[in-house]
Length: 76
Image 1 (cartoon, rainbow, N blue to C red):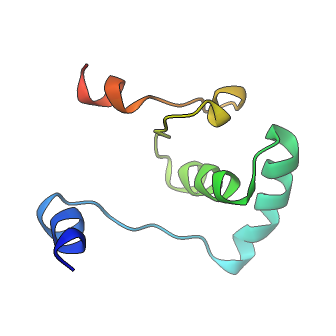
Image 2: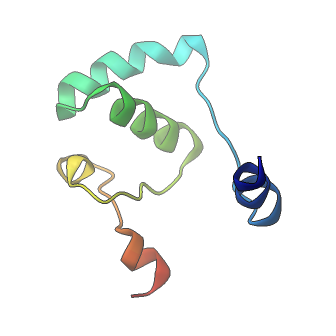
């Protein structure tokens, strides 16, 4: 519980989600960019809410949105 409080309340992380109507995009995104379900979900959410993708692995590097590494975000 303390982690959730630190992450969401103190740091200001917000939770975003997709509607059932958005799930058709997941199949298209998964096939187009060869992403697994969780990466396709993150990509679709980033696209819907105009967010930046941040990740350690290169799964999003082959997409139109690309990604930033945590080090880039933190300025390291």
